[in-house]
Amino acid sequence: MDVRITIETTFDNGEKRTHQLDGISRPYRVTCPDGIGLRLEDGKRVVEQIQRAILCDQVEEIIRESRVCPDCASVRAIHDYRTRDLDTLFGRVRVKAARLRRCSCDARSAAMPGGPISPLAYFFPDRATPELQRLHAELGSRHSFREAARLMKSFLPCHPPHHTTVRDRLGRVATGLEKSRRASGDPAEALPKGGLTVFLDGAHIRCRPEYQQRHLDLVVGKIESRNMCRRFGLVANATASPGSRMREELSDFGWKPGRLLTVISDGELALPNLIRNAMGGDGQVKHILDWWHISMRIRHVEAAVQGLVQIPGFTGIPVLFQRPAKSLRWWLWHGRARVAETYLKGLMHDCTRLAEEPLAVRTAAARVQARCGTLYTYLANNMESLVDYGRRYRNGLPISSSRAEGSVDDIANARMGKRRRMRWSPKGAHRVAVTRAAVLDGRLTVANRKRAA
Image 1 (cartoon, rainbow, N blue to C red):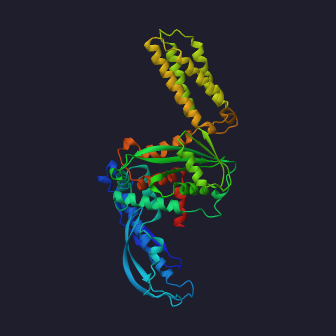
Image 2 (cartoon, rainbow, N blue to C red):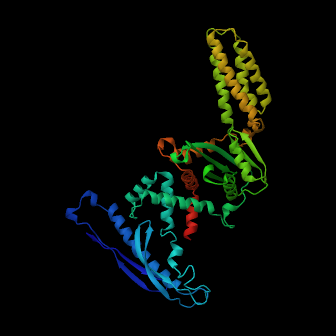
């Protein structure tokens, strides 16, 4: 059998035009299982021809309608024609684009900067459709740039992209995301109900050798309210003012100056300070130390004490060591940090009394002292960030930065982790982090829909 495809275009003025595309031949006597239905290569060829026919008609209509001056309704003369290659999701189309002379009502002449008007430049500023740029950015944020180019070449009839093209378009999309601002009528601009909570964590990615440093510090996290959430990622070395970037993320989410922000992170002081710098004194920051990190340090003390009392040569009373270690978690869970510090001091003091014990006991006691000293220092440095975790948990409030650690896996490790064996520049890592966060939240599709409209 033979299949013929015809396209009929109807313009706004009532004119009709017919395009005859290449047909598909499927002789029955030579048909094999691979020839049943529409194959991938046939689909690429047909879709590419449809795209070319539709785009050429659209360009012709755009130029015809743009010749009418919107101010005085006079018809503008054609200055010249130029050939343009437009990249689309379904192939590269070469069109003949006209440039128009400026109308007499316009104060600027053709000799001034800007010269003739190009109607096509408004729709294709980068000579590529927004959908193609969005797909390049999304695939580039999920896979390596070479793999993204290979995937598009395998499944789409678009012009085979180079990996540097995917990288550059991802960079332009990331820059556009940072500069974009929601319209005042956007429903997402409404003030989130309840307070805002910011979960922060950091990740280390390999840096390119010419930047004279081994790793880059990538800050990732999530901003949450009662019914909304937003991921973000940034590299401090890639921007002159990380605080300003963070303030933009908070403002886009709906934060207003003067509102209280709750920040949950580990004991790294740079993370809550980033939020304080972003707010610039326009509000209060309540920092809460992540419970998971506290619990892990308590677990290290409990394991060290358990190893001490199980040594055959231990002559002390086990309950005097085990009971303080087990009660640390309860006191800290209920916000009694001072009591927990007293128990730690007592536990370290009891370990000093084992100086005359055998070598194995002294070694285990020194290990307990070291673990207790680490926990004591950690609590002392973050005393103002300790809260009543049990009360917050019973009230349904977050007490852990696990959401931020999940963002580390989604944004950093999945694309820029050590197993990828890639090295990054600060600007490149920042752009990939911004784009990948937008892809995961679905913000990249929304931004490009608005641009296309």
